[in-house]
Amino acid sequence: MVITTTLLLAQTASAGTTVDTLLDTYRAAGAGPFQAEAGQRMWGETYRSNSAPTERSCKTCHTNNLTASGQHSKTLKPIKPLAPSVNAERLTNSKRIEKWFTRNCKWTIGRECSPQEKGDFLLYIQNQ
Amino acid sequence: MMNIYRKLLALAVVTAGTGLLLSVTVYGDNDREEKDTWLSQSRLDVASVKNSAYQAECGSCHFAYQPGWLPERSWRKLMGGLENHFGDNAELTAEDQGKILDFLVSNAADKSDFKRSKRISGSLKQEDVPLRITDTVYFKRKHHEIPAGYIQGNKMVGSLSNCAACHTRAESGSFNEHEVKIPGVGRWDD
Image 1: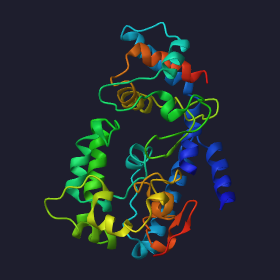
Image 2: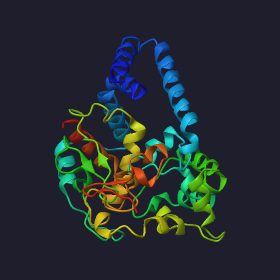
Image 3: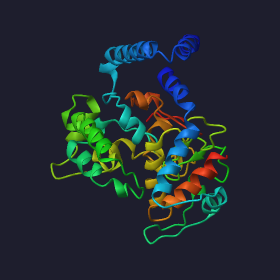
Image 4: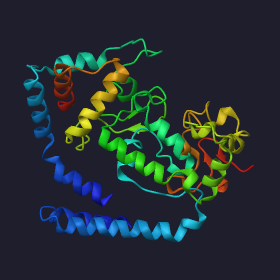
């Protein structure tokens, strides 16, 4: 616990920087300008893919309130809030952000998210 | 206990920039963990092995099942299909995947002397490659008497895969039936 908290404190300052760096990467891939509203729209959308037997959305696990805890739909394991305003650990680690984009876009939408979509999502989450 | 943590934390924060005390803190924590393991090793059912990558990558979605619950062949197969991990996408970078597979393989049930690792391994035929611990003969035998209403029908449990919901010391590798407490039901002694 001591280690985690200490590392966390050392990283907290970089939350904004992490997002900015990622947005630059997406811009370099041709995306932008980014809009939090577009991220919010996708957050609320329900997707149905061939591989998924049930409808899926970000809300399935994270709920519609990003400052609240979520829950893994199958294992029931709690998911800490995504909003940086209540969870300073969020958006501070670009490797972790990209990992969850890959996993969650494929699971929810059935494909990877585009750099544009990822940037929109980041802005929306960052404002929460 | 909390006081010690708070003091350590305060110290660590003050000197976080130097990095020096941080490494001392890390050291102290390791010492404590090693002592715990050494003292209680013989009473555990499966080896309580810790690996930060495994804990972070796998333990964020589900209970971090000890590697001693499945044989090497199962871990190899499971780690080879993470893009469809029981219906979820659990993809890892090649580097993390390799690291975690090494950890799982070197602590697998067929390489462990711990009581339940040996039993679970012994309950399998050589050609059996279970991907779910709950599919092994040994696991089924140990759980078949529990009414479905206590598990699947219990919103606080959900399924038999949720070890820590009922096994109060599961994370430490202890699965003694006297430590079982089913949420909303109470103790379970058969």
